[in-house]
Image (cartoon, rainbow, N blue to C red; front, side, top):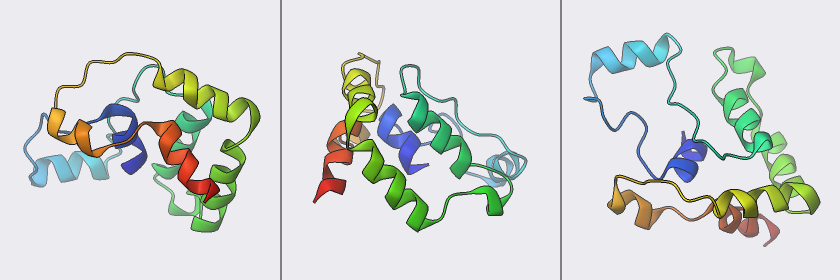
Length: 110
C-alpha cells in the first residue's frame, strides 16, 4: 500500500469507513485502482506485492535489488515521466507528506 500511496497521494480506501466490512473486502482481494500514468515496472511490482499468495510476493532482498535497478537507464526515465503527469489529488495533507516517486528512487542510491 505504501507504493500505491506514493503514486496516488492518498490513503488507500480513503473514501470508505475503516471497518470490518472494508477489512473483509480487502481479505477477499479488493485493492485500490492503480493510478493512471504509473510506470509499468512500478505497477507490476505493486501487483506482486498485493498477491493473495504470500509466497508470490517479493522478499525485502528482492525489493532492494529491484529498486536499485530502477535507479538507472530506462526505468529511471519512466519515473521522471510519471512525475510530470498532472493528477488531481484530493487530500492535500497526505500529498504534503508523500514525495514524488523519482525522489523515492534517489534515496536508494544513498
